[in-house]
Amino acid sequence: MNDALVAANGVGKTYPAADEQVAHVLSGIDCVIQSKARIALIGPSGSGKSTLLHIIGGFIPPTEGQVSWPALGAKEDLLPEKIQTVFQAPSLFPALTVRDNIALPLLLAGCTGIAPDDLLARFYLSELALKLPEELSGGQAQRVAMLRALSISPRLILADEPTGQLDSQTAQAFLTAVITVADEVGAALLIATHDPAVAARMDRQWSIDHGKLLIQTSKEPAR
Image (cartoon, rainbow, N blue to C red; front, side, top):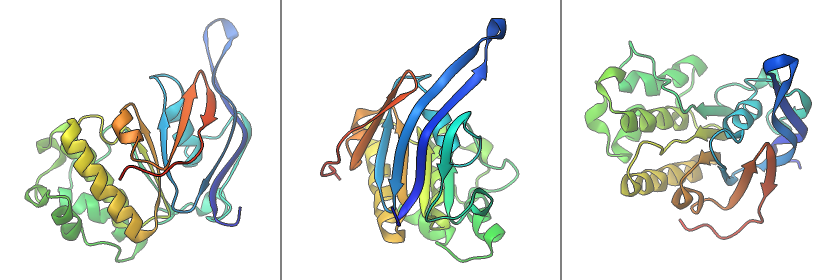
């Protein structure tokens, strides 16, 4: 457990619903994310994937149970260089160019990390460097958001459907580059996805349905 980045014990999440009832989004979640893990989080829409990512990232508290970050420190210590989250919704700053969006975590943390131009070149996106987010397609914006997360070399990246707007060939090429850079910087990956081809590239699959989590045994990844 010494290298565990995240540990969830008995985590549940409920939200108010109609007629003074509550909606149980998550229930009894037990999971551990080890250093350098490669995990796919799969399940139908509305199953609780995004909610679990947000709880693991420290953005929202669980209603039940506990989440800890043994190798990262207390919740208030979850600095950008420790955990980066790639949201499903647009998250780029509209007034900044692609290059500046990628560089932002480095500026805020006061560290060097991976130079934005180097990342753009490795992902064959150099032509986007001076574009604004409004000039990007949805798939381009998703990829830039992932590059922003990778730039600071975090210990853990949480990504919510990062290939959701990419065709299968582009998604596979992009994922190959993501895994390569994550290997180089030693980052763990937890990727929520609907795509079986993306899930198959991870070492382990977590399946979530009706708020319950099934952790499958690890396997050799198809990288």
